[in-house]
Amino acid sequence: MTSGRTFPPGFLWGTATAAHQVEGDNKGNDWWEFEQQPGRISNGDRSGLANDSYNRYREDFSLLREMNNNAHRLSIEWSRVEPQEGEFDSRQLRHYRDVLGELREQGMRPMLTLHHFTNPAWFARKGGWAASGAPAAFLPFVRRVVDELGDLVELWCTINEPNIYATQGWVFNAWPPGRTNDIRSLWRVLANLRQAHEEAYAEIKRRWPERPAGLVHNRFLLTPYNRKNPLDQLVARAGSLAMDNWPVAAGRLQRTVAASGDFVGLNHYSGRLVRFDPRHPGQQFAFQQNPPGYRVSDFGDAVVPEWMHESLVDLKSLGKPVYITESGIATHEDAWREDFLKEILAEVLRAIADGVDVRGFFHWTAIDNFEWSRGWTVQFGLIGMDPVTLERKPKPSSRLYARIANENAIVD
Ligand code: FCB
Image 1 (cartoon, protein in one colour):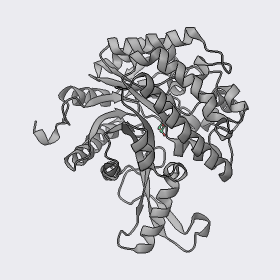
Image 2 (image 1 turned 90 degrees about the vertical axis):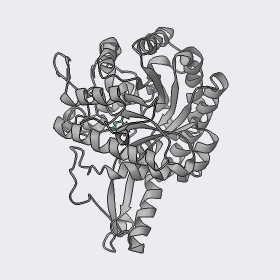
Image 3 (image 1 turned 90 degrees about the horizontal axis):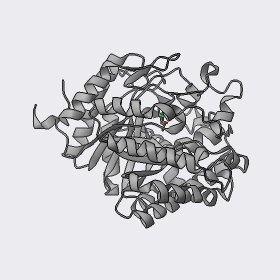
Image 4 (image 1 turned 180 degrees about the vertical axis):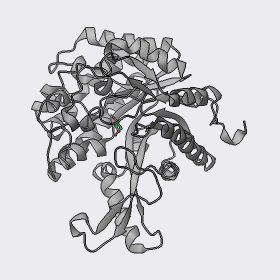
């Protein structure tokens, strides 16, 4: 083993999940309602029992332990904890105490996300994140979780992917509340999420000043088709500003992260090449394409390992530690996932060598789960699941990941 393939001491190895995608029976949130509308989810799929991880979390955590993971990212379901506005369910809070306690007992550090796409139905009915009172309605939940569970949480993520959440829901009509090009609401949603992030961060710091907390940002990389062509550069830059609309609405990522973030959570999956093309005024003269020569995932996205390096190096100027809070591929070919792991981790090491302070890697995901509007049609897991018996079936990639975590290094 050469040291060039080894990660820094104390590096965190884990997987990432979101409550709605794995727990099952989350009937009280806006996603559950959305899934009942015909035509919303591929194949007419529903989350249903999902992985039934609400009940099987012990078994699931043993599988993570078998992968030698020393950390795990999970989210807490707001609609369970606060099923009606102002009414907190102490039984559910106890459940999450059990979950976090079990995780720690099995040797993994919990990284807890406060908001990962789903909202209680009561909150959605009041206008959700587009309503002016949204951050104030979110805060009591945050306070409860911070006060009652915080002793068990080692790392906090405030909001998951504000840019993706807001555009899928208010521009592309793909996720709740199912709006198309509602740009005015989009900006309100982004501003509200930014405020919610800042207030959640302040709450966490008030109670647990030593525990790192941060925002999770999705970087969908837009790269000029011809790096030497100024027009390609221009449209790629404009596109990036739109994709990173969080910093635009929020008054720049730098300031938000500097003022209220101990680390940056990076979710990175893919991107596109962008070329200036006068024939596409509707797309701001930007023609997007997958780069030739790279494999395309079941999501339709090219997988370009070098883009992980680029995304990480871009974050260097923020001067904060980075956790890769999600990285993975949608594929039914697990052998590709094994190659992917080695390739992507080599890019992470290259970024570390270039001075980026990367502290951990959370693979999306542990077990194949309910992938939002794609339902059960795509698979991101290191572990498979029988759809009828819900039996867990570790894939060969899980054994590779176990060896990587054990060695704290890329292995063959
Ligand atoms: C991210 C989400 C996560 C999962 C992966 C594939 O955008 O945060 O819940 O859907 O994509």
